[in-house]
Length: 300
Ligand SMILES: Nc1ncnc2c1ncn2[C@@H]1O[C@H](COP(=O)(O)OP(=O)(O)OP(=O)(O)O)[C@@H](O)[C@H]1O
Figure 1: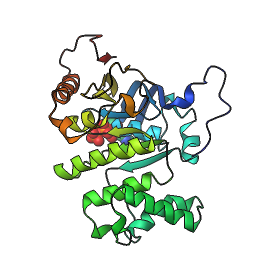
Figure 2: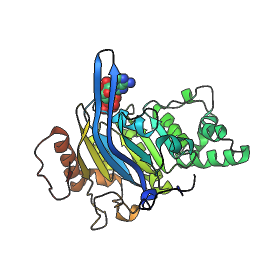
Figure 3: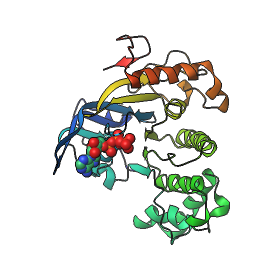
Figure 4: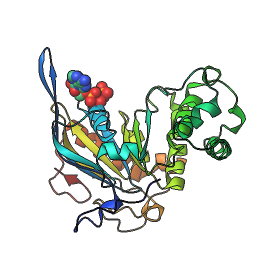
């Protein structure tokens, strides 16, 4: 992990606490069939250590936004900063790990060798690599499978390998685009619990794309609800779940860590507060009237 930027202009001193800042971003694709306005006027900040999910109808630009943050594409207008750096600088500094829907493992490498790949590419020595891989596989519960090959693992196990790999360089930010989309419900719930634990242990901020409202509610500090094309942010719903310390603020920087965060236990999924949050996100998603400025709901 690299040191915070030292070149920050006066007045940007709080920037290192912001993992991702998306400012007035538009994205237009020029295609043979015409212009596709994928994103319009996106403003979003994710605090260091915060878990934010993006949810919205198919084609609303969730993946596009992730790709812009990950420096896989550039905005048409507006700007993006990752820990106060340009996305390109942040990528070169390995500020984030990526896990997308397809685990994307190399079939000819063992589990351990897949996890080691980013470390290898960045010249980490063999002994340090080995120690880090052992630690990561332990963390995702796959220590016994280090010498297996991806096709000898279930889909859920492959996803866990991909998550371990995304954590290899201890990124302060994880970008995850529907990483559990292909999993059965039980495996998916297990993976959600694992991810919350791992993010908590490593202190990483997470930006997570999902189509599942309960998944977003279970995982997130805030759920960003997007509207259909051109993709805009319709609402940002802070999760108020049982067990969270009283009085968490709702804005960026509000997340001070686990102290203000509800414990993501299995029991939470059956708690009244969980259903209330599912309803709040569903209403936001379907555009049912939610009073402007209603307590607990940030509207845009
Ligand atoms: N490279 C591209 N060229 C042209 N159009 C694109 C490109 N990438 C995305 N789009 C268009 O931008 C819009 C947003 O796509 P995107 O994949 O970001 O949506 P999404 O919300 O992630 O969808 P889903 O939930 O189905 O994965 C869509 O209309 C899509 O067709």
